[in-house]
Length: 230
Image 1 (cartoon, rainbow, N blue to C red):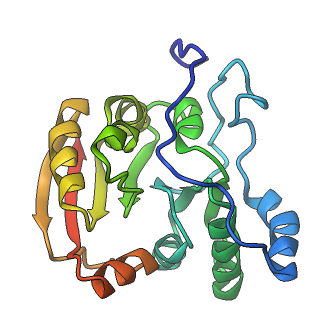
Image 2 (cartoon, rainbow, N blue to C red; image 1 turned 45 degrees about the horizontal axis):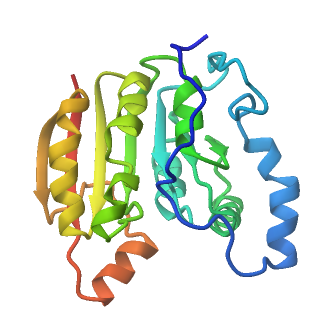
């Protein structure tokens, strides 16, 4: 069992979980393809005792993308690194549906999914099992009173740090200046050292996501930060 984690009402660090009506093919993928990719034993309904997941059957190093949106980056990285297993956590159903279409088109198989809150997954992953994690264009929660809903706050960062191995890499990309500020303030105390950034130069294996494209269209500049788990 994981360390004692009492039941509590979490502040969501994401917005709505459903958008416009799904097309028939998207619903078909959600019903047929998604269950084959989903990690079981993650939610509190499935795993009320918060037993640690057995990830021994997953091949290679484990990388996690927190909030993969439409899946552009997740599919790109899975294709670029076939010897790695990428786990994506995303609560937005329409984003998952878009991701499944991209995954099917590319034919990559080294991806697993948690269709829900990343914190539920982080609670039950074995300590130190992640070699890399990505937080790309997270919900900015721009109003000051909502900043505590951002992922870069102590509770989510504590869970992430527990699941990451010493020396593991955390990448953060955002177009929001104040999110950069809070990231630099909150991530190091959680057990990470800033290794690179903030910079406007993306990583060599980066691929532009739809959120980054939107930011650029609207005149906002991307910022990229790399941290190392201590």
